[in-house]
Length: 259
Image (tube, rainbow, N blue to C red; front, side):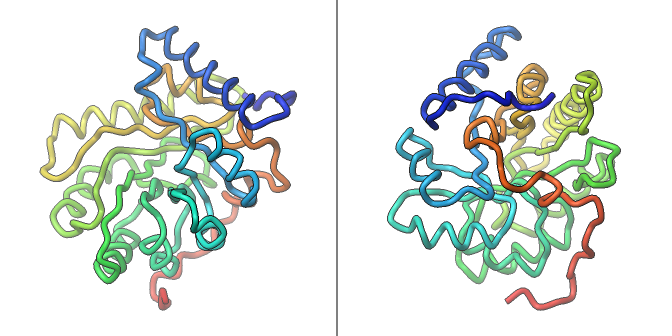
């Protein structure tokens, strides 16, 4: 499921192409395309590319690394750009996400939620959050284990008011078999439905963020409400995804200062 290698020359043309594919995937399953949000993923792309995207009406941008959010926030301070953290976040980076991001989609453990809550309280802010769930067997993928989700949601709801839980996020398996990819997305939808039935006070299960440039049509068929698109919009990157999701994980710096 690789992204198309031949792309239109301008961002506007690439955006229209992606939107056309969204409409097609939605219509094939009887969904309203308006119910599917596009989150452009601007990782590794600079100020000029983001300004071009903003000229097309986009304001929210997904980033994998905190240092890119900090740098781009400074470069684009004159714009209404909003930053969504979608990459794995170490607890010692919580301060900058609490200060600059409007949303985190990679909330995957209590230690991170605790660090973010403390920093958000200090900043006098609250942000939307999606819980990242591990639906793939790959060791390189991050996320909360499905069986841990109910307890995690209850803990956040009871003790972390600055984190507004809005739904779930996942990354599908990197596999050529579309049914293996589909199974990851289907599991996330089933978990969302189960959490809706539990009706935990303060927890809203509105969003399913799943699907990227190579597999978003399948994600839409399985109920995605938001797809995260980078390559199909911005073009090919100088770094591969391994730069952002390395096979060998770095240990989380739980006990190091986050300032």
